[in-house]
Image (tube, rainbow, N blue to C red):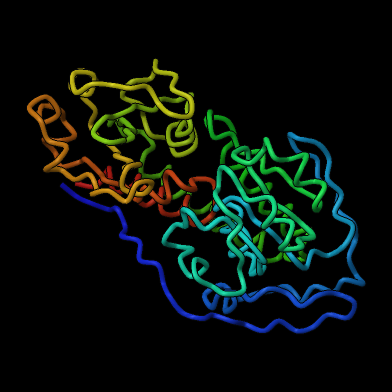
Length: 335
């Protein structure tokens, strides 16, 4: 069996990039090296040239009146967006940081704001942000957060991503580009994401293989259909579902080995939640194997893909995570 689950090693070290002092504004937070050296076609943002940006989102309307200098990102997707745009942050939750953002874990200039699902509001307040970025995972704190700073909700649907998942991500990226005067970089990232989606669809288009997306959680499995957090795998990337009638929402439908055997998928993508959320052993072919699963076409043809669970589970709605997901989808179609 092929295995594509990346091991996460948190990188220790002091990574400080001193930002130029902008008249009338506080010094910006230290930016990890990998993001600080990204190429940019945009000129340095100038507060005096800033045009207020009004953002309408699912929780309300947010007006950004000044160029943000101290940004708090409460979701790893938001951290990745800012990393792609070369925007420093002052704080983020550090409980589950994906490997492709690992340099943020111990960066001394970036404050730990608690947990992704339950951010520490006292720490958020102490970080003195002038812009806060959240998703539905932090939506129940929206009113309290707006009392601290303008707060923007990323309207990605983690329960049902079948409709416009990629466009929502592109729109959010361009919106952040407008706010930070980074529209050139944002357009470049949007173009690269579009190319990656098209590359994947060229592989899946017209292919008869049917796939299951399975979530492993402490020895049990759940399946995700078209109307679920992984609906975009089928609707956006063109993968044919092995069980199209299953509506599974956020956590998936608990299934048995008999279900997998009867669905008889040609490809199985395994997302190992336990490995990333509880730091337990990673699921592999030896641990997953049983007589029923061995009967599936996916098992017989070596098309059980143990994916990068940090990209699929912790994020799945950002530029970096979608690039990883696309490559692993393609892997499932390779002989």
